Image 1: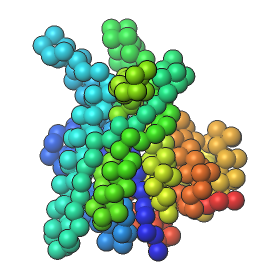
Image 2: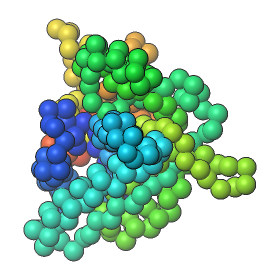
Image 3: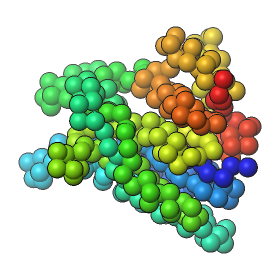
Image 4: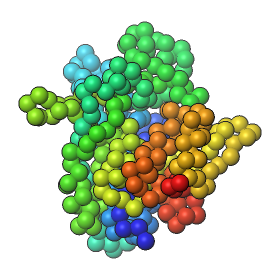
Length: 314
């Protein structure tokens, strides 16, 4: 019996690359996510849902660039806050609709969440986090030349804009998230990894231009909440080694030690499965019992042990 669960939904699962990104399309995808998550809400007393924002926050930045002569651009942390609100709203509405149809008394809350990072994190000098749409090599070269954007090839799928991705250190709204969850509210929090903040000399906090990896923030949140499990939902059914080759092998149940070995072999691409594996390992290293990586549509089966990759201590 799982009492407390953190569910992390990947950005590409909520905004796949095969859509234009219209509001109607995003509503349909949020409704699909809600249908997949409903059985978890029915079964788990305390549930917190996080989500990625990679495609969306990149589009916000791109939209700003093209409108820059008419509207002053926002700093990247404010763009993250905008993506939190927009994606969170769609997920919240989708889940509320599902709960109303089921005559459930549970309700959903979306909490804008700030996450503290170190001001001297080396990530600020070495941007690695891909956001936004995919570009061809020629388009990426033009973006780099005309906009000064750092562009990298992302897992064979095209070129993307990369930004700093510092390590999450502390979740400022942790107490509120825990309190709401303990009351039975389904909490949507830490969207896009959280709004990146640094501690100022006077004890206040200020936003910084970065995008925190949502899987690492989810692992931190699951640890701090004392979650029984961390469920990372993505667009593939299982973690695989030798991915995309004739030697591909899906992993069902794997120990943390075995997974570290595969990680050291370079089996998991940094722009795709790498952060999810890293998050699973961090959760277990901090005392977590089980981390699961599975397809969004198989969320209920994954919790039941019938789908996904289950990472356990050992």
